[in-house]
Image (cartoon, rainbow, N blue to C red):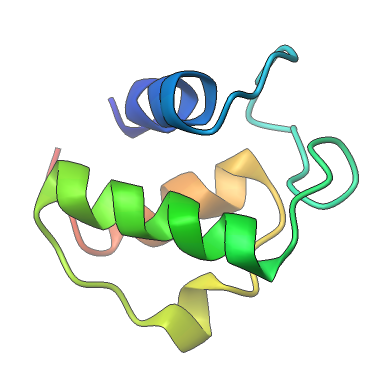
Length: 76
């Protein structure tokens, strides 16, 4: 599932140590900035072998929004 990949990237590659749920907010809960979001998106692109529209994806602010955006590009 996409959520599992997102969690793995956040923990393994980005060093996030807090509990990650669908409601986790990138800015408020994880203190992400635009560079962190770009790194996450790049890692997701690599993982799923897709190219996303950064203008659309960079506005997301929760794990559920990230999952929904990635679903547009990936068939599970």
